[in-house]
Image (cartoon, rainbow, N blue to C red; front, side, top):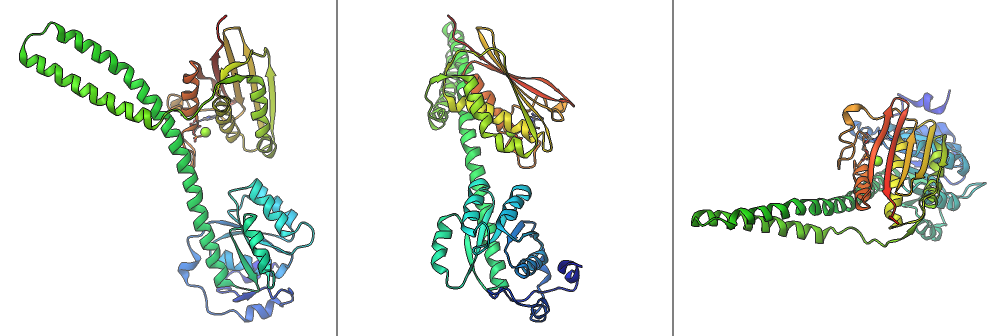
Length: 395
Ligand SMILES: Nc1ncnc2c1ncn2[C@@H]1O[C@H](COP(=O)(O)OP(=O)(O)O)[C@@H](O)[C@H]1O
Ligand SMILES: [Mg+2]
């Protein structure tokens, strides 16, 4: 029987001090030292995933019990490399990471986790006397550190704090991303509204030209005033949300596709996705902002990969006919339901629990900027193909 099974049900509290630095506390002694039970409310409301990495088994087991009692989902690892593997597979929200461990040390593991999995936050366990190391740990990306032996109430409070900060930071980052996308989209919308507004203004002028009735002339003037007002609002919107700084250079689509696919390599490998490139005819470079074109591919690849969590095929086809470049991105996912096809390019349309719904809207916006076209060429239960067409300069 594992310690967890042994204790489930009867454990309403856990020892208040865990980890004496020597790792020699018998489990029974610890259990006897348990104080009063946790309040019922304290055991609710935490669904966060916490990974504990420590080479002292007793610390692992007891910390895990304390956190499970609080409603957390816990994972444990006895060394850093097993820990990093668990981070990769389970994507915990938080890691409690021991500083002193055989094999990969805590600092190295901390740096690796923070670099590769920025959404996973880390609290370090350090031994007494290593306070000066704490500065290095915080610099290396730790959110907090806890001195061993620690008081479990204190530990839980620190965990809750770090998780609260994490949620806020992630939320802020998502909001900023949405705002940037929204700014970009509203610039496009303002532009598109001003065009028909111009026509309205011209036709009203035509209508007004033959009219002598004083009252009717007044009506026309009112219409002009309102048109001016809309135009003013649109101009302000355009000024406030200009297309982000862009720089046109010669962009080789094939090289940019290669580079973008390279960025996605860890993800495709993680999800067992085979990448197939079929560059039929390599188009000449086009004048474009590489980061905008890359954004098109990034958003399409992200969506494709999302549809293939276990395995699949991401196929990228490139071709041109001297006038138009065609880039096809295909996945072997489950396809887009027919009823969604007319909405997928709309801002904020998403079928994902944490989707922004901005990906395809932004793709379409960028494609339009380059006088291109994007469409779903195929979508059924064998997968989806998006086709992006970009014009080549004539001559
Ligand atoms: N390759 C795809 N396969 C199936 N559905 C897709 C694919 N790409 C996009 N979609 C659908 O279009 C919606 C909008 O996509 P997008 O604008 O990128 O926003 P998000 O990815 O944030 O949901 C997705 O939520 C999904 O329903
Ligand atoms: Mg998307």
